Amino acid sequence: MTTQVVTPRPATADIWIDCKSCGSEFLWSAGDQQFYLTHKITAPKSCRDCRERRKNEAELKQERIEAQVSGNHKQAGVIKSYNAEKGYGFISRDGEAEGIFFHVTSLRCDRKLIRAGVRVEFYEIDSPRKKGATCAERVTVAESENGEKR
Image (cartoon, rainbow, N blue to C red; front, side):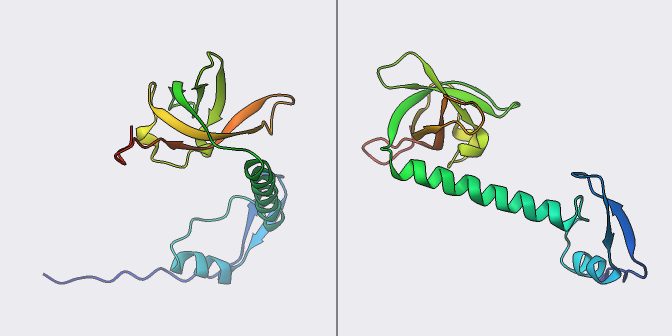
């Protein structure tokens, strides 16, 4: 049995692509195409400016979260509900019936471990989307005294 080596075809022409974010056209050069092929990266869907703006927004969001988490103490609770398809759920804090919102992006553990009744630890921060509300960030599954995940 022989092994066939397939090499990516070199790009021969520049391509104009419509940005999915702002709608403007941007040039995807033959050189960039070759780089993407060589590194097995999918074609860009947005222009450099939009990609850079999203990167900066993500960094600012992380800085805001860091500032709030550093000033808070870790809380504990139990997953009240979780919808894996929609990517969010609610946690009941210890001693309280009211649930606190969490999004799948706030999980710092395997998503397969998250289901109703699981004990978790988290930080409560101001919601970036809803003024006056709070949400859970850095949600992790709590460990029992013997080190097992609950």
